[in-house]
Length: 371
Image (cartoon, rainbow, N blue to C red; front, side, top):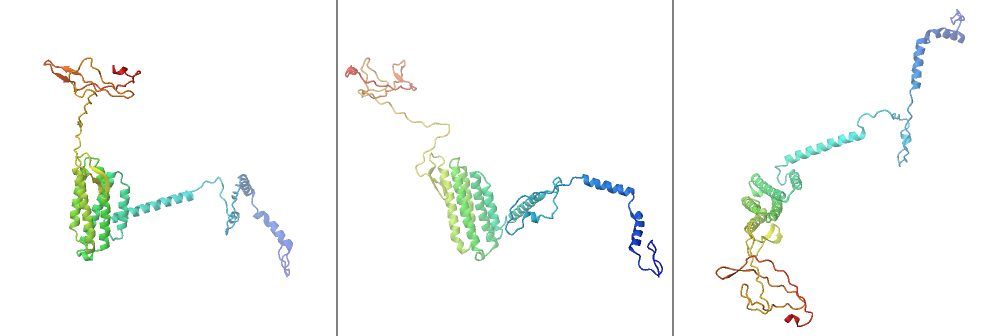
């Protein structure tokens, strides 16, 4: 047998080392594994530095009543490390990211809208992009300021409808194969824009020099010829005739108003679907700018009691003057200055002074005024 001695060594014929022997061996190993003085000093400095750094206090959760089906805020945030209050926030945050995303979405929408408008410039009635084209025209009209500019914009849209009809006629050689709905839609829109443009232009032209009326009449005549030369389906012949009749009315109205521009009264004050109605009274030429209309001034009435008296005639010295009725104000006849020429004739001053009104005073005693 091996038995161990006091140092934990096994002795022959002995069993496992005792606890005292193991304790003694560990005591002998302690100086070999313990840190030296330099390591102890370094660890002490690190611990003291950690104690000197202030520990941030955790944020207190704001009191908020728990909602139905949700746990309280304190329970949800339990165990989640809070950020120190003095730590700077990195990045833009939720609001900054949302603003960037919104700007990107708006830029995408505007770019898609611009591309759609560009592709829809040549769209025809019945095409998928034709609605976008009409929406762009409505937006363009809304951004046009000034009555004259808006009137010409309506005529521009009406001209575009005739161009679309011509394109449809070239696309479908046989009018029977052409889409009837497209023809009817274009003619309806043409009538609306042509009437709106005519109303606005006539209202502006009658108060100006009338040059816009000639422009309107020429436009209506050109569009009438274009519509008359179009091959259309059988069911679109009647609507086309309505549009042609509308153009004829516009041209006639423009010509009639233009002919009355030199009259004193151009319009009657009424308005219908194509614009201002011309006056039906006889044309009285308007005065030329720079001249004034001359009218004959009414002659002064002869005084009562002198039926045969005329201006410039001889007067009787000391004759009684007519007396105005008592209690009334009677205007006196204007005294016209007279001048005698060397040959003995009397002339009247062409620029007499204005007469002053005379106030009749009633007689205090009846009969005194007759003396």
